[in-house]
Every structure is written in structure tokens, then in C-alpha cells.
Length: 75
Ligand SMILES: [Zn+2]
Image 1 (cartoon, rainbow, N blue to C red):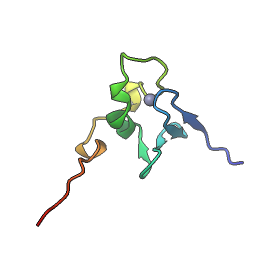
Image 2 (cartoon, rainbow, N blue to C red):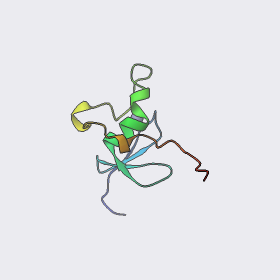
Image 3 (tube, rainbow, N blue to C red):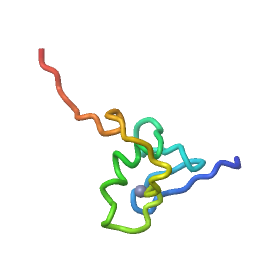
């Protein structure tokens, strides 16, 4: 096998590869900031054990990091 290091957040069930690349269960891989914006910020204070609560590794959340609301265009 390769030497890549994969951690799985026991709370969010998301894989973090090599301590930075986040593999979502669907969609493209992101980073810890995106994971934080989408998932981990909602578990703060509720549960211990989330591996993405290190603010040193999370940068400012960009609008594109959040879930995009699904809209149906009617023209
Ligand atoms: Zn987490």
C-alpha cells in the first residue's frame, strides 16, 4: 500500500488524508476549512472527538466553502 495517511473523524465520518485533504462522502475533495464550514462547526460543544477542531489548521471560511443552496431556475 502507499504511505498516505488517512484519518477518519469519528464524529463527522469524513476522511482526512495526509492531515489536510478532506475526502467528502460525495463531491470533490476539499480542505479542513471546507470541512469545518460544512460539518465540524456544528459539532463544537456538542461532542468531543472531532479531529477537525484545531483552529490553527482552519483558515477563514470563504463563501464557496459552505453548501451551495440548490435552486431550480425557471425561465
Ligand atoms: Zn469532524
